[in-house]
Length: 306
Image 1 (cartoon, one colour):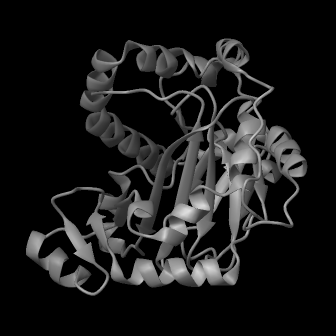
Image 2 (image 1 turned 30 degrees about the vertical axis):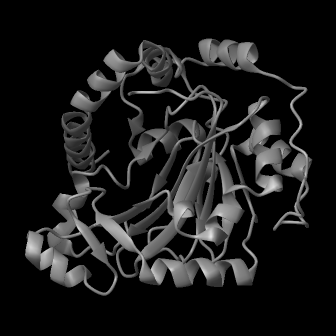
């Protein structure tokens, strides 16, 4: 590993912990059950035990309404998820994509995820100048409250069937989010590193968490494609399980899993895929074109922090 890569890795890691330490402490004080999950959920044997205790294999999500994905075979998707951690080709119908894009062109976003930095696509440059901050990201939380098409998508029976069968229990819809990742100039790379984007990591929202991701813009290698490490949701060496650090450098993962296990997902607008968030994954940094993605996330347990 070169010195520059090592520096970049630790630089991103430093700012991530600095930014989130207070948040983690607050969550732990408000909900000790979340803290136990966050500390021990990364250890395979404990994780598997908790999933087993929470499992309700008799749970069946019936198809009350026709699905937006009639061609999808639920069992095939779940089998692929169990093996690789990701299943692609869960693609949006064109009319659904067009309805969502019409909404995304008109709605507001929060710059870098901060509520005090609202903007629209039309006034983004003006707002950046006003707040003297580059917006590397733009988030719209709970878009289903304002967009009936996204609400229909997040309630789709096939998505719920996949989630129930993979989670082996009654799924809980944790969140639905629109997420812009804007192309970064060379002058903004240091700022981008502060958000730890571009690092392979796994998430701990619950003992098992499944997300559906849909590209809403064409995504190629220059526009921040999603990448994952195949099979890493079921195979992590003990060092990874016991480490407080969930981010790992590329070279380390390639050495352990093999270069053929690192998969980059490019695709046209409307392309979608399901992913176990315990897989090592990352959003690559867009260099030439902006990327817009819709995320729908399911968990087994809801952790309240009020």
